[in-house]
Image (cartoon, rainbow, N blue to C red; front, side, top):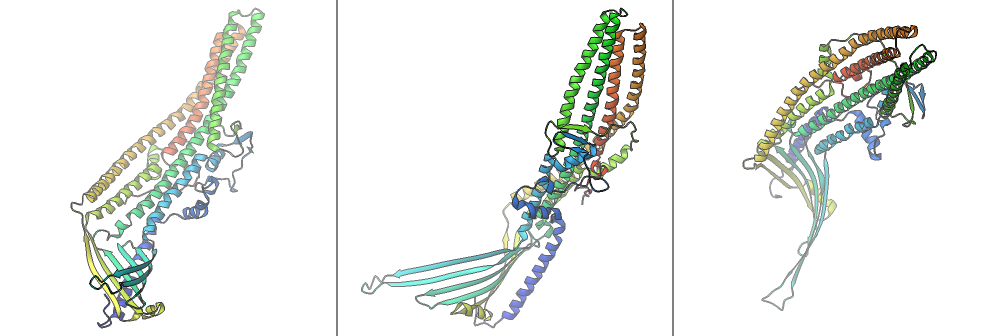
Length: 557
């Protein structure tokens, strides 16, 4: 209430209000300066949001979140790229997939979408500008029942209010509000009068909502969610690279199988023609032709299946790399061939150690544990009563004109109030349930992390055993193929001198074909097994020289 008759305490009160305001704003600025370490999106995210979101979806080429390895001059040229022919190596296939794969383009948007929730949580502490204007007109009529000869008394009053200001919530649990208010009042009994008031209201939480770490919990959780989406994106990119390499080598294997069957069919046809010639000259009985024809039919049957497998492998590879200006009928010529010289296997313990640091799903699980810890901190505040300290300081000026009222604001009129506000639900059942759920969820995240670590060790060791098995199979299949070639030569010699049969030659050719297929398959399966081992250890992108977010290990706090 204005008290113009009391001593004028305005300078001390205004100074106190200014000091309190500067102090609290300083604390808020410090808290806001500390907060970006937990919630500020990375620079590329802000750029992508500002540059693209208003215009619609982001095209895949405008998201350089994955940087493939390139040649020394910074390029990765394609030997032949056109609508009908494509010749590429496995590195070029990976490059095309990272550049044009549609699933990757979809996944690239997820970190951007998740990052917007950080801005939503940060907006809780943004200043809010408010304004309100109201017009009020009252007219009352008083009738004199005892004196009907007197006219009715009509009273009119006008009251116009305009108020504006700025309010802000700080991470310290402080609510600040600075307001400016002007009131114009006029009635039939009083002349027009203007009242101006400048006020500052401070509300400080003392128990519930008083801790900075609790008030910033949701903000930091949103930051962890963004980081989790980056690790999820890295895992997706790693799986994509593994799928592309596997599809590339599947196509190489299918192409080699087709070539082997074509060659074996040509050999079977020559063998059939030779058998027929020997039958015509009487060197072999006519029953020999049946075995040769059966072998030729088997080779044709195998060639049909091999060509079908090759076509499926080709369109699978095209779908993954999604080259521009290509279509489903584009021919693909692989440049790489499996190498018989394979490197020595690294010890399994090394891969286990790498997996603990680089597996994206493990790092994502650690972030979920941190998020659960923040939820425990946030919900723990709900167990406390709500006790707030509020202080309101105001200075008021009165005048008969609008401008004069603001010039008189440093006059003797002032108001102030202070007090405590307590609120606590009986039983506090909801807060207790939320706190209990947060603790159980955190424990569940810890158990899930331990289980995932165990499954990771299992996956890495299984992948290592498979890579080691395929490596040993390379030498065994090579030796088998060499021996089968010698057996075929022996049977062919026996057939020509008349001591062998066409059936024996066909069987030797069939065994040689199987050994050739097993040899090329062992080479390619070893390459694929190494890719799977690197994927399970979380180092595939690092070994391929591909940069992607989420390479750092997450440490539990």
